[in-house]
Length: 454
Image (cartoon, rainbow, N blue to C red):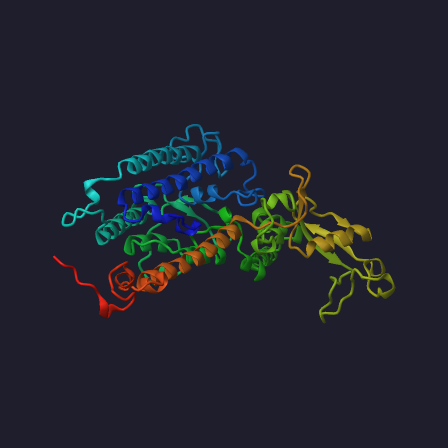
């Protein structure tokens, strides 16, 4: 019987043993991909600069999720926090990857066994002797086991009772580390940015997050998607989240009678890097392959905060009138950098205290300052093309939102096929009696049905 490509699952229809086999093989493929992809990422990952070249800038996808669960050490002798490691043990990047690959092999063998030995008494109805599946029992067992695992994750792993805890950081992604988390049982547990909600929800609900939910928490941000592992969200840059924190710190330092140079020197380089537009996952586009480093390059240093002045006027005066510009046509120029005599001075960073008055240099830094804090990039090592890329946060969101939509339509499709089976088949269940050869004296006339003579 010829079948179209989308009817391929018909081969396991009413065949419980082989239905289990294909599920085992699917799990083997998922586990094998996770382990092998982790080893590949470890082979290309450079842990030397966790501040300016973190994992999310290098396009890592699996490593951030491993780190979020408390894995920070490598058999290579390095730690994600920059420390030197002598004995990483099994709870390391390579160890967990190897366990997934071994599990994949065992699941592959189990799938082959169930495909060969499909005709087991376990899958037969005792009353009819035909192959059957006790679906309520199967669903009950699966939900019970998933509930136990979910509860154990929240009660033991996340809380540190029997496990390392999870990656926790401050709102600005500066002080992240793996630590135990106490459950939050109050209303604050429903705040997606409260880590305690992760523990309490897993303990109380013991259910899994749907693909739509994880896509939302990844794109909009939450305690489960720290920016140190997945990069900033687009809304943090759009709303000036990091810029406001930088301004607050500068005002606090000036209140202590520190100079501008001293105030900007106290700004963490990591915080300044988050305020660079190239780290915004929405600016890279979904169809530009490669890591962020393949776009604008590998960040090597913060040049400092640029302040542009014409004597004491900064490009735009207090009334919002443009006092200096980079004209499209020279003939239309009224307030060009050359005419006004704009200078740029840097505070903090590598160019602290340095000023430039050359118009070409001033205009170069004026253009770059529109993208946030100014950084120097190495574009030669990876042959970076200067086109922004999205971070793993953007890829995860796009992938899960897409699959969630397909799965949602799949539920509707298969549910409708079950409820309206006769409509989808196009055949009336009683039609076979009407078209049976020789069943009626007059074809299709049920009133002329022949009687069998015994």
